[in-house]
Length: 147
Image (tube, rainbow, N blue to C red):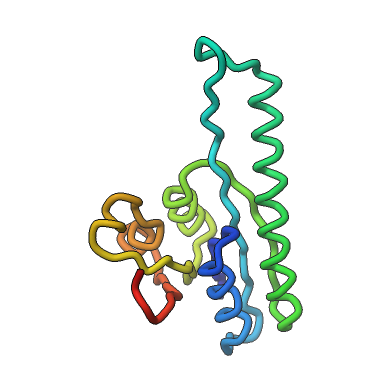
């Protein structure tokens, strides 16, 4: 069994990792921890930002994404699970769905903020998109109280 877990630095994501770490899984299950960073939107004087500054910002975001993925994978390994990390850039919705197809995943696990109504409409939802587009089952771990 191959399971993709989408993580960020939110409490909702950490709760999803804890859920996976405590759940029973078939022997040999593999967990691919994905942390996705977005490219910085940088506007400087006259809408021109030196490339070196943009590269530095991208490097910082990539480094943070690696830290987030490794922290989650370490928690899974501590629970006796086989976990590896993957870092990507772009829109997390698309990256997770593409990864699920490319990796031939059996399951994608994501946490959710549990937003409803106008908040969800305005902010979008990685979980909603992944549920609708992933080529496999999706487990959404959420708080009990909608926000």
